[in-house]
Image (tube, rainbow, N blue to C red):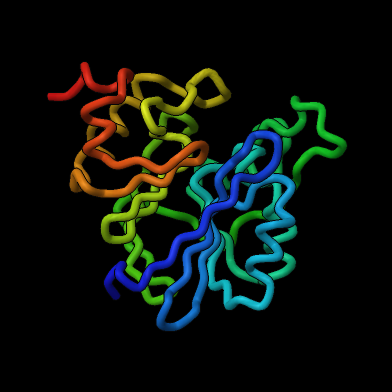
Length: 215
């Protein structure tokens, strides 16, 4: 089904202001949640009563999974993550929550589904292309529906994801941006893990971290 039936809502959650996304098929009312972050009350209120068919995780840092347990309990939807970060869901040392002074570390059940680079997920009436885009973290993935890309913490408006956390690597991140995201059509909208949305063309033109590397 074309992305013309896609409705996108965003919620900046928690102290990290992490963008959680609610994707709804306007024809079927089926819904997908991407990256349920910390303090998810607004997100939970929005999806209550919706037919949530999947929870997609771009990666498993604490601020992207902080509300996973609540969303999972409410929706009973299966969780999708790259296998390189499957263990991060259950291990607070890997997802970082043991080091941030939280009242309780974040511990989640393992994901029901594991993602693979290049696969296509058929969910909520959409064909969702999975791109493995590591660098910010080893298992970072981007999800593409038509000209909409949900990229987590890989590429931001005029910035890039940090690479100084466990498993991060700057050169790998640059390759992911160049060889995966910048191969998308220029008018593709990028919905990042933090901050405002942008487009591939805008970042090729104005992002100071990547403009010098274009081939």
